[in-house]
Image (tube, rainbow over all chains, first blue to last red; front, side, top):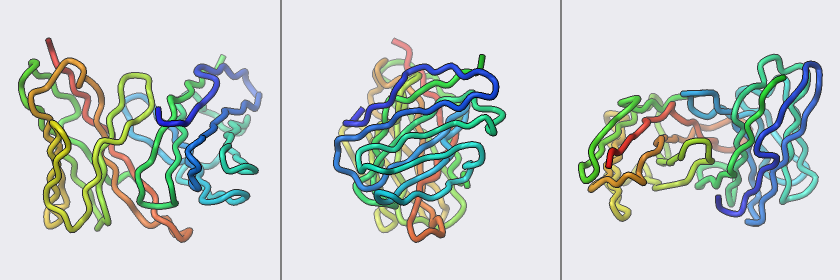
Length: 113
Length: 114
């Protein structure tokens, strides 16, 4: 999966709880992305970051938050405001923002207890 | 912002046959990419074709792009059981924050029967 690691592989969230998904890359890429994938669906962009200390909302940012304090790390927090968090979450990175090829991590499956 | 749409949704073929998947999109693009996803895994980039290209090859993969029809096709020749996966097309769009982002279709689920 191209130098991007995501942890954990499975994550369980209780009602009202915030959980954080980890994403680390050793590819020296500037841009990083978080996507959500629901069964039988394509990927929807949650947040993206073009450079350290900067990030932008994607199409479905409500109920999620991110930080980009280091180039190699882009954690995603699923907050209690996200009422339907059960999904497969994919992190990706690219050399530069925009149209370049994206490299994906193995994903984290989030389930609600 | 999903604008790519793959067709068919599912495809089942015998090993050794060719598999063709199509992608249609709505607005003009700079490039179109195809990705593969094995069940429960991340996506893997297969091939990128730019808007000024009509055809591109990579191993057993052949991609065509018709910008006048806003469509692309992915052909996998001499399919193998290991090609069983979902295949997604991705097109770029201007996000309004000074950069282009990718939008993905819902994918074609390919099953290759040994």
